[in-house]
Length: 166
Image (cartoon, rainbow, N blue to C red; front, side, top):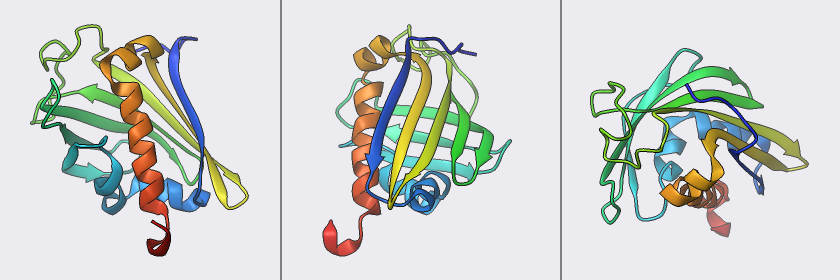
C-alpha cells in the first residue's frame, strides 16, 4: 500500500454544481458511466457496489494509447455523504485479481495500489472539489494519470450542467 507524503498528487477546483450532486456523480453508476474516463476513452464497469467495503471493477479503454485496456479494482474504505470518499485503486486484470503495474503493461514505476481521497465542500451553489492520490505528482504527470484526472473532471462538470447550458 502506498504511503502518503508531500509528493502525492493533489487536484482542487471549484465545480459549478451543488455538493450533493457532485457527490452523487461519484457514487452512482448512472453518473459514473458518463464521465469516469478521459477524453477519447470509454469506461466499462464489470460490477458496482458503492458502499464502505464494496467497490467496483472498471476498465478504461483507450483506442489510441499505449495501454488499450486499463483494469482497476476500486475498494471503498470510507463514504461520508456528501463530504468525502476514500478508496483504494488497485491495478487488476479483467477478473478483478490484483496484478502488478508491470504485468498490466503500465509504467513499472506506477504503484500497484494507491489511496484516493476526494472531498466535496459546499461553496454557495458550487462545490470545492479536492482529490488526493498517493502517487508522486511527477510520475502521475509522466504517465498521463494527472492530465486524465483533469480531463475527467472537465467531463464531470459538463455532465452536471443543466441540459440547456451544455
